[in-house]
Image (cartoon, rainbow over all chains, first blue to last red; front, side, top):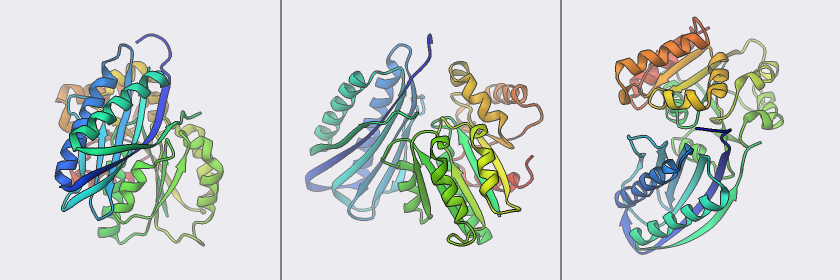
Length: 135
Length: 198
């Protein structure tokens, strides 16, 4: 892995809204798949390294799910309170990756978000997309 | 009072470990816990999880905790008056190097506070990370009173032995414990071992 690896850090919030409620367990399964795909995508690039892909999915009610992916074969760890249904979910993401430029990561995050919304049959608003590289 | 500073590269299991440890200390030792989380980004993921687990959490944003020392000192100065606690647990971000701020912590905690640095090592990614992040990982291990080799469930014994040997090379004699943080009982062992570390 040549050269000095630069950390690219994003904070993103996706607001996902469905027409009908969906069991939180199904939200969890679909968002876990989103993280698995993101893990493979961000790991695949030559010279890149995943620091951490993590997220917190919350609803107006009690349910929530925490997601964590570091690009290993174990895939995404997800856990939380998954009883009940969710109509509108807020997914906060932290994307901490090395060896990616902001513009190319923007594109991947956008594509993955679109796909997630499609799979959830939900509308998706990217409420925040911050490049928040630590000094 | 105890102050435990948890560090370790991204994804090494800090959040899983500290949330379980806080729960254990509250439920079995009846301790009052103050949790301070240093996250990157303005959207704190770890703190959201901890709050759902009924823990009081204070957030420090901005990458390395060393860039947030003013806010950290203000929290530490409130201990004993504004915040009545038995144990402070700080979860540093993955890029934090304790050597850059541990002196400040020790200076501003109440007299007699037992300060311990616990470094999490990700056994599953150790070989890859130690090649490309050697400076950061070496620094984190060098500052540790206790190194927790995590994700033992994901690797075989040879890998665990290699991780332990590398850690011994970096800091000879440092105390280590090998766990899977997904097993609460093993995190509870960490809580007990910490008090004897150093």
